[in-house]
Image 1 (cartoon, rainbow, N blue to C red):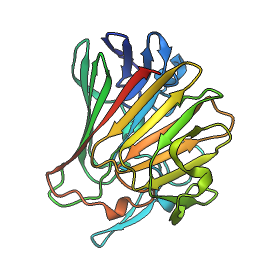
Image 2 (cartoon, rainbow, N blue to C red; image 1 turned 120 degrees about the vertical axis):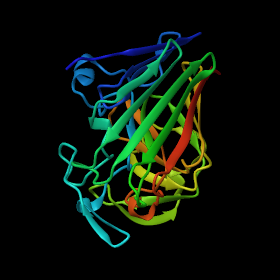
Image 3 (cartoon, rainbow, N blue to C red; image 1 turned 60 degrees about the horizontal axis):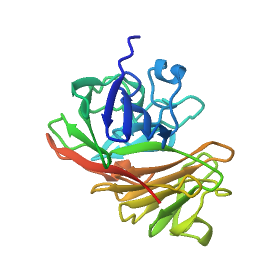
Length: 286
């Protein structure tokens, strides 16, 4: 496989993209310090984004229970697509090569065209536009429905923030979905105290893989010892956020998504229309 790396540079920031590895970000640094976990050579060569710094979630986020959904009277069944997981997860984009539409030293646009023959049974075109300037990184994500009828469709971004012993998170939400042992949502509840990040609190000791509702589109990732912070903001339609903090890993994830886990069948994208949103990373010194 030919691997093309797109390198963006602006002031103190450096971003590297690998369109052939699931349209993923493979490095994001400020003054040479990683903000997201860097992808190694094996991850880049794999042709997928699952071990990258951040990868796109299109046309849906998280799991579809048993690969089954019903939409407008149509029964849809999807095959498992993730190693070790029996439920289809995170759509198609993460495991396919994206086309480079254009690129320069501070911006790039990549796209993925899906023909509906395998994976998601509806045709669509997904787009990512990256813009790097001296204040940080902006990612515009969009999905175009190429069908002549309405389809379910969603968007999301899955960044892996570097996790230090003292890393903190602030993120205001209204509710959370409890999940079963396979990560499937089972109940929407008020955010319990131990998962409440409305004021900055350490990530250490918190184990999560849950979707939160009623997100205001803002989150702050703080590394106190580094005296470094990232303000993450997301526009509509990103009003859900998945917080993934696995035990004993050197990363945690704050994923802006357009729909709750398991709820893709409740979304609706009209024929020949687009769903679009913007996610911004603004790092600064404390």
